[in-house]
Length: 562
Image (cartoon, rainbow, N blue to C red; front, side):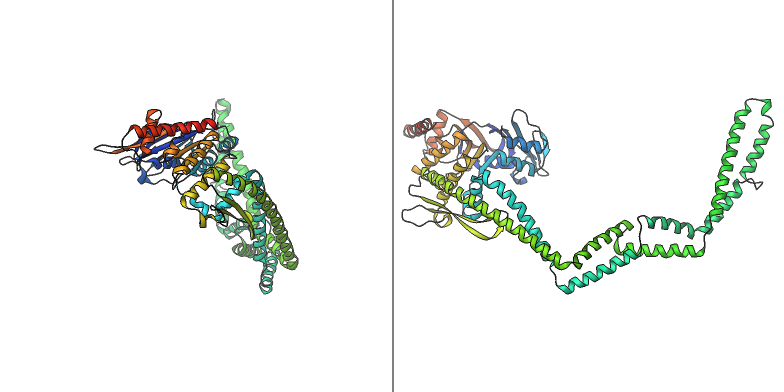
């Protein structure tokens, strides 16, 4: 249930906060006062498109905040998926609006607009001023029927979607591979050449790295030998200038006097360690120099091998591992082309199997829809009679479509006749704007009794109706308010009289600005508003009496239908 809305700096609204009640909530007001602005604010909070021009003049930012209460498991599951906490069933949707970037929060956690929209689908259903026009589209009829039998259609539709995607993938794979034979032979020859070329190289992982290092050493051998020779000369004991000879002489000198002063023993030990390190270094350097020999032929072999590896990497991958992966992929393709007829036969069998499975599921779904259609026809016909369609016939026509899709293979259309003896025809050929509006209300009424969504909003559902029909619409909305929270914007007194909670919107202007004020009314204020809706410019006693009678009639109806 929508508990409250807080709006700040949006169009004519400077700041307002409303607390909604259970049952049937009505919003009335003069034309242009901003009734639809309230619904627009709700839409913004639920992730609707925001235009900076909708901010109040002079304001840099705005705010819309909705507070819901819900015990529905689907809402809890959705919030859990988003990792958003919920305490005591309360959900707070906040959207800050600015000419720069707007932000959305759920229970204080920053979220995306898409996440808000996904949660909104579980919290509220908004019927806009022109939504009934969607009834002219047959795709909407299919959507309505499936929504009516959601517990039966949803599992099959989910399975159909999976199988349909499998079939499309198999069909695409078949189309991609069923090429002309000359093209296959050319590709087969190329793959054989590439596989032979890579296999002949007998590659091993990391081989190129080791060869590049060996090549680098060989190609710089002269420079390396000169540097190492000079290093050996500077550190060995074979030269008077060598550090080993100097350290040896120093060690002998300090050893000759250490017996005179014990404090010199530590320095002697350090010098002895230095001598040992230099000698070890020289032995390793001498060993490296003695092993540092290679034939010109070995250098030629390394160069040739490295050139081969670099050519293969240029053609088939940046590394040896990528070249080997390319080889494995090419072998698989080659095997496919070597057994191409069998491969194509396998694809055809796979595509046919998926298609037959899809058709079977579509038939299953069609049978379910036909049974649901019989139920829905009767319930919608009864709902339409309650909305003052006195002589109405309603039928759901289901035809088989040759092209199955993710929604099955049914072509569904609502047919109606509103005059005795008149043949059933599509809605668009028969229904006026006011009739379409009532038909949509009938559909909403029937679906709402099966729907888990607590809050329903109707924005001027009364378009194109009056008199007795308006009373019938009012009665249906009142009954709907027994099972759901209903918010309705209206200009008809018959509907306003049925309100459990009544709000009025007024536009106030002063020298500097214009403001929209929204307040809850009851008692005499509500009677006065009904009198205004009845067309009275002044609060005459006759108009007020008429308003009281209308309010009493609505109260009597609600009492009879509790």
